[in-house]
Image (cartoon, rainbow, N blue to C red; front, side):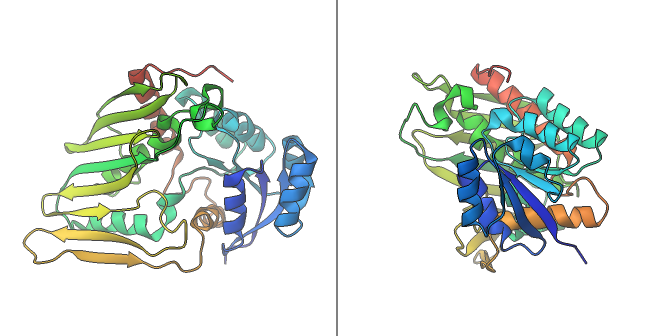
Length: 343
């Protein structure tokens, strides 16, 4: 039996509220505290979510003895700092993606988790959803034959706003870090499934893109990768002129269309994937009805289940994969010519 895990949340923005909302629907988690830079913000958040304790600083949250695990939802540039401090405080860590701005910082976080013997997971929530698990099962079973090509795009059409975090370089803005991390993660996960692994490292990777003329951050980028076994991947992300969020997985005997790969069940809708087998008359539609469990509840439960097994890594999102994702994002940013100042 998996015991209840006491969660604290660092920051009070939209993503933190979504995690707190879904945590109520998890089988294993309960919110006990929230920390914000302003006590009033923490008090309002706590009141909205059942009267959890409110702390007027992140340090105070990490000092709370009842908090066993923390969810970190700050903007990207502060993930590394607070993940490392959480590890030093002996708290298990679920940190929003992208974990950091660069691979070197990701490796620092992993080293801290290892040194202080805490669980750490990068919060790619889609990997724990039943839809993604079914995709892995289909690829591993040979339902589409030998895997040949993965296509994945995450483009969200937005009006330019120089004050929005997506366009502010000092907040880690740009589409590669915020959106491109999903196609990168997806391709690694599916390529790994072909050999029964959680992920695969590419043997080649090439990325490019364009910088927004005013913001100086990337607003559209494309990349291609080759994985062991000659598995190819076509990836894209963007924020200003294309609205496209989809994936497809192609093999020697068929392919799978994935209309909503990265936020399945986010809005409680029924999701579906379409399996095409060559030589058959009609494709097979596989549906995933919402069981009343929010998308972020799956990752909270995965953390608690791993801890119950005595593990410090979640099998669907191991530490080495987070380091590899960060390395690919580094390469992609270099191809675009975008660098972030150290925080």
